[in-house]
Image 1 (cartoon, helix red, strand yellow):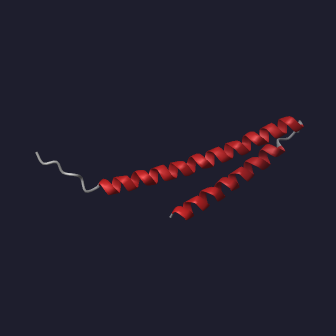
Image 2 (cartoon, one colour):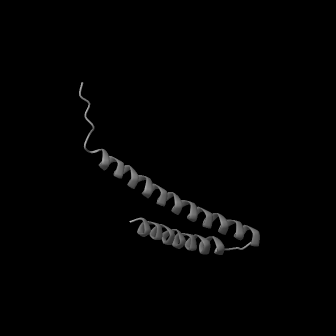
Image 3 (cartoon, rainbow, N blue to C red):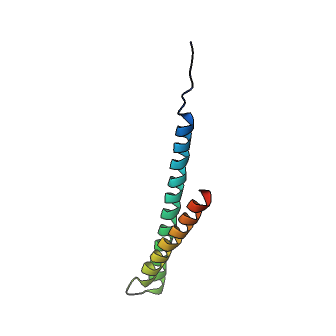
Length: 78
């Protein structure tokens, strides 16, 4: 019996590596944004604000921070 190794093995490995990389970036973004929203909610609750100012500000800041971290990581590894 002759067992052949497929020629597309390096292509699949690169594909899985890219998938893991982009999944990691997505998880990082989600964690940063959720941390910002959670912190804003806790601050609004602690300070008894009538309008959720801190939730709004921290969630927008978290989105900007997550984009910065993701783009920095994406450009560095490329």
